Image (cartoon, rainbow, N blue to C red):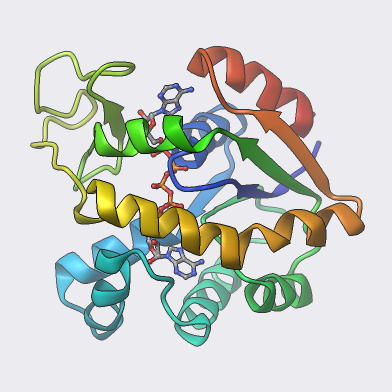
Length: 210
Ligand code: AP5
């Protein structure tokens, strides 16, 4: 079984949704740089204060900040821990830094068209406490505005407004898409179509891991 897994794919392709399911199924730790940065911003830490402006405009947070953050996280993992990287690496420099520390055995690319991505993100609602995500049409919470898992009030991420989403997609194409070829050349890439029923996609995702 693959135990060192990167989730690639544009904003809104379902990395968080599928990563959470994968982590639950196999007991892997999910490391989401986006969740970590948002928590740091909410808590007003030095990292969060530096990162917030970049995130709100849809730009990438500088490589050195992200690489330091992730190297600390990786150092705290026990030997043999299965890990899912959600949102990292996002640049070739980050991928090189990760490759020096960990032998990645799968880069799973979720493929979704732009129009669908915009719809998903502008109608996403997120939980600030447990990081669960919902969609107003496809995956609504049982009670409007309330997280099913922890009862917190859901919110609309600042970077999920349409103009910022368009910028995030451009940033993705420029900086992160080259990683598809990067991992393909190393024989690690698998692509799964990320549209349709969430459980159906998860079945295909599991096949790439087993
Ligand atoms: P981050 O939080 O990582 O955002 P992202 O990559 O843009 O990804 P998202 O969380 O928006 O989407 P997702 O693919 O997880 O989709 P989800 O499962 O939620 O990063 C945010 C910011 O932090 C960046 O812009 C950057 O500034 C900074 N940052 C983070 N990492 C960085 C790094 N390494 N380097 C530099 N900067 C970094 O699904 C989306 C919606 O669709 C949900 O509503 C969900 O319910 C719905 N959905 C999911 N699957 C389906 C389906 N099959 N059908 C219908 N709806 C679905």
